Image (cartoon, rainbow, N blue to C red):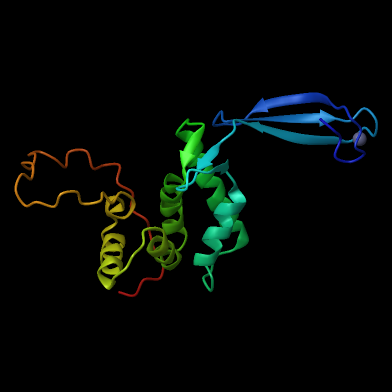
Amino acid sequence: MHCPFCRHTDSRVVDSRTSDDGTAIRRRRLCPACHRRFSTMETAGLTVIKRSGASEPFSRHKIIVGVRKACQGRPVSEDDLALLAQRVEEAVRAGGHAEIEAHDVGLAILGPLRQLDEVAYLRFASVYQSFDSLEDFEQAIMALRAGDEKVLTGPEPAMGGGLAGSPPAPSGVGAGRASQQVSVVQGGAS
Ligand SMILES: [Zn+2]
């Protein structure tokens, strides 16, 4: 590892610790030439597979650029965007896969963005999920009001579309709804 200050071609590791979630190692290094210290982070490679089939390294910067567009004119700071990108990266890394599809990166953005700013969220979702009618917006807004993440993040394309053969509704569902998240929005008119 070259020293970032004097470009000396060697450095010594003086400390090494694993991040809390275990997905990264931070090393403190000492340059034997200029005696300055610097840190490096070691993480597993994470590759994003685009719809075209091309792949590229995961980039927080790209997340920020994409989300920033949706946040224009909204009270969202650069720090907010940086934190969102960090949360997205943590979420996709938590999946434990070396490769992830771009679509899934988009899904991972929706949750944190919704908590950050609902208008920006609607803008992002409308592009990302290809809203093409007012009904799409109505559904997304209704889901926002209902706090139902499933409608927003897990749309299954309707296959077949026949009316016959719908599965019988299981009885006794609703026992395990305790983990549903409710986000608090300040300043709502009553
Ligand atoms: Zn140096």
